[in-house]
Structures are given as structure tokens and as C-alpha cells.
Length: 124
Length: 124
Length: 124
Length: 124
Image 1 (cartoon, rainbow over the protein chains, first blue to last red):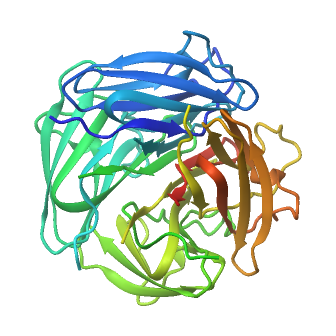
Image 2 (tube, rainbow over the protein chains, first blue to last red):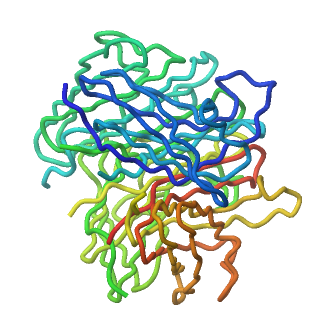
């Protein structure tokens, strides 16, 4: 299995709806970077978060094992700092080996669910 | 009619909501790989499913006839094994001739419908 | 203003939910190919519709005036034949000058709305 | 930090649902161009809005500071003219330095929310 994809990805949209403790983890609002490492070596991934009115946060670091997918919720990032809710952000995802990144938001602020997804913007 | 597209596609997002037997096939939650073979020869397609914590599943094999579209529900894949519900996955779709792949999820876990779609990530 | 985009686009997903005559045109379910002709000459556009189990339909022909956008509802295509509801399809959009194509579905089968969109797949 | 992305982007879909004054800014219907300037110099951005039946509007001008994201609501554009609601449009976004653009619509016309997003079409 060869590595597939690119080493740098951008998700220009980012927004965490305010949390609602009454909902399960599956149905609470969240944003996710779905990442696939199809290759045979671990992917060392660094994430930088950009805001509208302050310097970027990060780097956040995660590892994706070979031949594994990681659906990373931005809500779960806490080191070096949590991403505030109800705040516009954007993200830069950099990997030492090629990966593929798809962005998803599930929003359950009102009755029903809202979903959106897009393949992120790739560049090397 | 010439073949159009690429031979390798990635959908990094994958998630099958738990099934609800009270809903019709049209309205039950599903994820779909919408594939178009615009060319004049059959497309032999192989799908590999990646997970967060185990080795990949597959290969799953389907054929798309010339000048036909196949909207393949991941829920319908059973050979060599079904994809478990409520589990993160990602997919690699490989074809012997160029095709185009678009990813869609319909989610009916709560009242109302949620939809999302994206052109998959293409590479050759 | 120069022409921008590509001459061939694919939307691999296509599905028209059954119509509901009780809803307004704005809120009834529909699929749209949003096309932009940013250039200074008319774009002559030809659409071919592919199905799962029969030969393609078309060509459907539309013209996009210079510096205009056309949000074409697939539901409105009738010549040479209407696209049946509740049927999987895919579309090939060809233009004699570069255009940009984005796909959108609004689904109002159940309470609430569902929306999805993606930049179509471009090739030349 | 280097600049990332492209200098010209197209969002072929555009539609502002009629406003509902009873909703908060977070939950009222809107369309957004989420833009990231990952570079170290300001991005001077010019937006042109195309319609179905009249000449384009604009240019609208915004600046994105270095290492900042701007989630620009089309509803907020007023100079040289507001974009009318319930009207099809498309947008061309041009920057003097590379940026990345993602399109999002939140639609709250009916109960529940509908969301859609896509990476815009990039060209240079």
C-alpha cells in the first residue's frame, strides 16, 4: 500500500456550536477533520488554528498509524489550548507523509440534525 | 464517449448511523459512493475500507457497466464482511479505467433529514 | 473579464426526491447545477444524464449569457425527456468555453430542510 | 509561515434566503465565504457578484490581515450595493496574495437547521 494524498491541507471554515450537555457524544455538535493515512508508515500531523482577531494557536500534534483513519474532533483538542466555542476559526493540517483530509460538521443546536462535509483544500 | 475522471479516489469520512428498521430504504440513514463510468468499457472497481483501530477490510469488488452510474451504499457491502454501524471508517476506491466519485450521506437519526456531499479526493 | 474554469464537469450524484405539490418553488425538493460564465461570450452548454440501468439521456442544451450565472434545476429539464423522480442519475456538463459548476440539492421530504453542495469534478 | 492557496476562487452557488428578524445572528440564514490568509502580508480581496439577468455588482473590497481568517457573510456586503435576498447569484473572489476559500450556507427557513459547505473552485 502506497501513501496517498498531500502533505498540507486547509479547512477555511471552522465553528464549534456551543455545547449541549444533554446530548450524547454521537449527537452533540462537533467539527471533525477526517484523515486517512493509507501508507505503511505513521503520519506525524501538526495542526495550526487561525482566528479572526488573534495570533494562531498550536501546534497541536497527533499521529495516525499506518493504514488507519483518524476522525479528529476539533472539540477534543486541548493541548496547548482548547478551541473556544462560538468563534470563527480555520485550520492548517500538515503531515510528514501524504494523507487525505475531509472536513465535516454535525450541528444539533436545533431539532433535527444538520450535516456538512467537503474534501479539504490540498497543497504541497 | 471517452472515459472521464481518475483511477483512484479517497473518501476520508465514513460513518454509518445505527439502522432504524421503521424507515423506508429511501429515508433510512446511509452513506453512498456515487460513481460514474462515462466510458465505453466496464469499470472493475475495488474498494478498501480503513478503520481507526484495525487492519483494513476488503477488497470489495463491483463492476460499473459502460455509460452507467452506480450509487453504491456502503451499508450494502457484505463480502468479505459488513461494515459495522456507529464506527469511523474511510474508503479507497480503485478502478481499472477512469471514473468519477462523489460521496453522500443521508442521516435520519432525528426528525427531519440531514444531507452532506462532496466530490471525493482524486489521484492517479 | 476572462473566462474562468473548465469545459467539462461531472456531478456523479443525482437524485430527485418525489415532488410535493403543497410546497412553493423555493422550498420544494430540487437538484441544481449552479453554473457561472464569467467570460465575455455566451457559453453553449450540453448536458448528458447517465442512469444505472439504461442508456444516457440527452443532449439537453442551455446557453449562459456572458457574465451571468445560471442555476439550472434538473427538475426543469424536459427536452428531449424529463428526468424521472426517485431514480439515481449522474450528469456530464460540457461547455464550449470555460465555466464553473457547483452542485446543490435541497430536500424537503420531511419537516425541516436538508441541503448539500459541492464543487463539481472538473476536467478538460 | 508561507502564503497558501490560490489568487482566484469561484463560488458558483449563491442564494440568500429571506431574512427572519426573530432569529439571532448565529441562527439566521446566511451565506459565508470563509477565507484564510495563512501568509505574513495582508490580503487585499476583491469580490464580484454575478446574477442571472443583470450585469455584475462590485467590486466589493475587504482586507484579511496576516495569519487571520475572515468568515465573510454575503448578507453583510453593502458597498457598492446590498445583494438582494431570494435571488440567484455567484461570486468571484480575487486576492493579491494566495488565500483559501470555503463556501458555507446556514438555512433556518424551516424548523431545524440546514447546512452545506464546499471548498470553492480555485484557479490562478
